[in-house]
Length: 379
Image 1 (cartoon, rainbow, N blue to C red):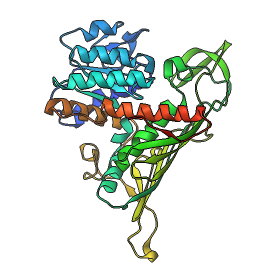
Image 2: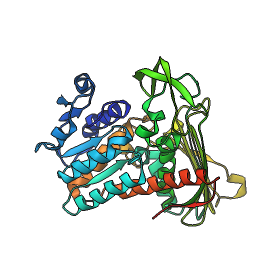
Image 3: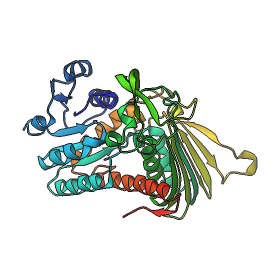
């Protein structure tokens, strides 16, 4: 695994725990953790066999089969392309890259690698929350009919303090974009995953609410402690955009890290001709389902607790009603990726899927620069 920050902890938890609950087709050895700054302590804490400081050396090793990339977006392309060329399977955190050009290079490398049996997957982990996967299954089964409208929003508040420090996520050269790429990418991917449709055109606006912040003294989680000097915020704080799906249905999207009181609220509501579905990551074991085919006297959103053994992934864990948490999606991701490798099946979401999301983000940026004009997502 290359990188050992917040996502490093989450991915490590997934790799460590998944083989103890799921029947993996091949054994997993958490061999090496790579980081520039004191990777040894992280390797010990999270259960990696050893630590290293140069990912190139690790990619060249014959005893490494999978490279898991959890670094900031500015390094994704270089690491992934080199790893695929070396015959390593690659799991890369989202968004796939910082630019469309980088994502295109990565998708092309993944296509070449696939021709010789090497697999690549992008880590849109929320697809693997059981309630989200179950929502996809209900839509695919026609339970809500033809999709007419979607509302998707990812709401956080960890930047509402204007004196919160300038982390790497607030620098365009490292992160690519702000709320748009960091969390808006999840809203786009999950909408497309559940609906089975793609965003084709967008009209959007990006806004930076706090233009300058204290520099970062020490990172802690998503934020950290502030230093005395200040620097410019070079990414968006809020992204608002409308999209038209491939069926012609309209979807509204919001991504913000300034929505006071919302901690990690990825919320999607899909309305169809026969019913509706609503999902909220802050209540991730639940799905709201509205069956419009019932008599009017019986209609209303009902809460489904998605913890039955028949629900996606849930049967590998605890008895009915015993809730899962944020970290379980990373175990599901690890299991699905290794299974795809072992069976020779193309994993999803693919680098091509990640490239498409990058093109959606790019179209939103271009729309915002053009006074919110409707802008096509490139194919």
